[in-house]
Image (cartoon, rainbow, N blue to C red; front, side):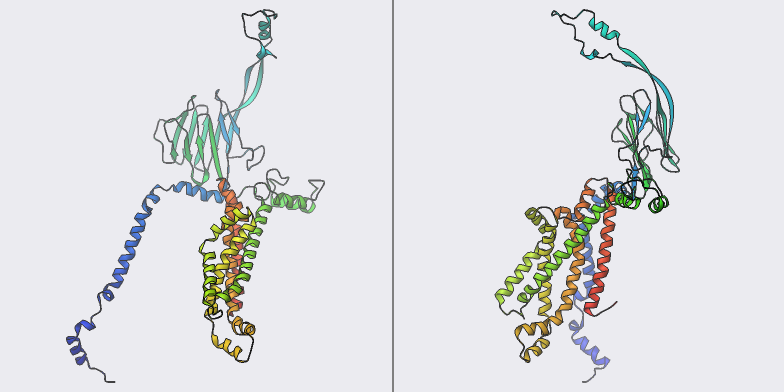
Length: 496
């Protein structure tokens, strides 16, 4: 081959310049592709109104939800009577237990004497005056009123309450109104007898009021928030952590340190004569009404079994059907196409939709979840298995056939050794993936921890329970992912 000199190359370029110049696409392809991508993202921004969504999103509520995952609230109500005296009321299932007396809520009390009118017995049934004849003496009503009496009672009432949210934020409630201190800012609120809440100054950004006279909501960041109404101040004090995770307020171990609980379990006197302290502690943990550990763990195990059984039966059914769908194994084109279309039908509908269908057919429970996983994965695994069979090396199969082996032996020794590691690897991957999927389909009634998770989310107040179940699901997924990767590496002959 003759090598052209630079002069000869220049002469050819001068005669045929149009052949050596790059095309328009080759010169501007990067610019065109980049412009198309930018235009596509601009279209998506306009079509989905992303700017409007970001502008109107309530990021405060989103932050509150995230905080609720890792914290709990104590919610006392400071009720204000018509006479100006106050009382502090805690919810029935308050996380700090019965007879609460937290150090962050200081109340000033005084003893007052009240004179109460006690109606006479039967006074309410005194007949009204009437023009008709009556055998009752004319002075009966006067005698009943004469027997009415007054009683003097001595009571202890709250005259002032102070709530310390954190080092710089506090709220003082008195008969005159509410004084709010947030850092260097001070807000004075007046409570009128007709239930209105008013202030003489403009509200700061951390205080909101929809209309003049209505309730005012005060935000104190992660420390909590408060709601001021005309007759009550609702406090929401937030604390980091999960309240009563081991022992509920009704447990004999409530409020005790781990050291005290350990001492009671090992050598303490029995708190319940019918069982040991260890049995009592374990029973209180399992049946904790706030966290329902036993029910959550049972539902999690149900999800694991649901994923395993559904994947296992899908693998068993997809295995023989894949040989029928493979064109190099089954040479009947009609049967090939029918089997492949059956796989397409199964996997074309999402597992979530199949879960809705089977829940309607079988009712809520694990059977619906197992059926949804089985039906979807049969189609997916069947397609993957058949494609793997169509890509095998025919030399190994021909070698087994050349020694006179039966058709079944040809598949056993010429095909299976090539595809079995891949089949098992794909089945293990789907088993690990279906552990997550079983959680999602459980939310529609297919059983497992997904239904429990959905119930906790619907209450919109048990987000710490949601976080607890999410962490359990993540832990199980991490463990199964590690097991699945290790087994796949061994089957494929690669170790990491």
